[in-house]
Amino acid sequence: MSRVSIVVPVFHNETSVEPLLSELQLLAANNPTDEFEFIFVDDGSRDRSLSKLESLAATETRMRVVKLSRNFGSNAAITAGLSLAKGDVVGAIAADLQDPPSVFNEMLVRWRAGNRAVIAARADRSDPPLTIFFASLFYRLFRRFALPAMPANGFDLFLIDRKIADIITSIQENNVYLMGLILWLGFEPAVVSYDRRAREARFGRSMWTITRKLKYFVDAFVAFSHFPVRAASLLGLAISTLGASYALFLVILHFTFRQEVAGWTSLMVVLLIVSGAQLITLGIIGEYLVRTLDETRKRPRFIIDRVIGGASRIDGA
Image (tube, rainbow, N blue to C red; front, side):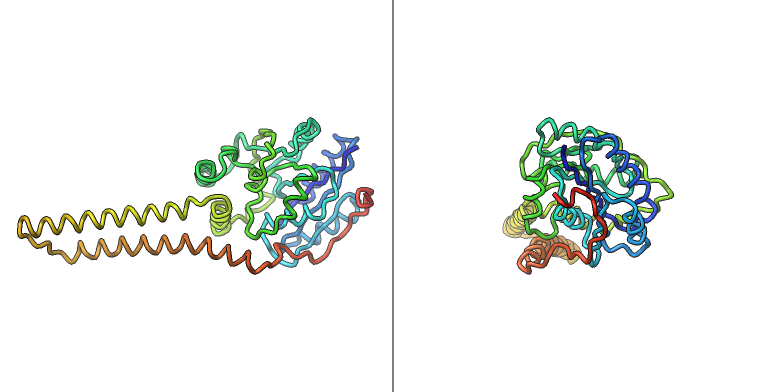
C-alpha cells in the first residue's frame, strides 16, 4: 500500500473546490490499494473559499485545509502543502478544474514503474487565443534560454516521490519557479500528455492577471537563466560599436570632405536610444538585485496560520 498526498493551492475558488474534491475522491476510489490525503492550501482568499473548505473537511476525513496568513502566490502555497504532506508520493493540481484529476491515474502507474517524478504536459489547451499566444511565447523562450527539458506547452500538474518533495521543501529560495525547479533537479521525469479543459463559466474568471503573469515570467527567467543580463551586455556592446563607428564616420567626413554634420534631431534620436538602452539594462540588473535582496532577508516563503481537519490514518504514519 502506498500513501498518496494531493496538494491543491486555492485562491478565490469557492465554486470549484467541491466538484474538485469529488473528482479527487473518485481518483482515490480508482486506486483502492493506496491511502490518500487531500491538502487544500488557502492562499489568502478573500471570497468564501476557506469557509467552503472547512465545511468539506468536516465530512471528508482524508482532507486537510491549510490557511496561509496572506496571499503568497501559488508556488509558495504548493510548497506549504508539500511541507505538510505525509505521502510516499505527492502530487499537485490547480483548483480551477482545467487540469483533470483523472490524469493522476496514469501518473501513478508511471511512478510505480520507478519514475521519481512524473509531469503532465499539455498536448492542447482550450484557452483564449491571446493567452495561448503569450503562453507559447513564454515556454518557447524558456526552453531556448533556460531549461530545454520544459515541455513545449509547459506543465502545472506533477507527481513527485518523497525524496524530491523533501529536497524541494529544504530549498530556502524566495520567488521560486516550482515547475522549473522540478526539472532543474535532474531526475528525468516521465511525461504524460493530456488536453487542458476550458475554464467553466460557473467557476468564475481566472485570478492570473497580467501583472501576476508578468511576475511569473520574470521569476522563471531570473531563477534559471542568465540570458537577460548577458543580452543587456550584448546590447551595450552593440550600441557602443555603432556609436564608435558613427563617430569615426563623422571624423572622416570632416577631414576628407570638410563637411560638418548639423542636426539637432539626429543628435536627440541617438541620445534617446542610448538612454533607453541604459535604462533597460539597469532594469534587468535591478530584477536580479531585488531577488538577491529577497534571499538575503531570509524571510519565510509562506506563513501558515492554521491547519484544519485531517483525522485520517495517513496522519499517524
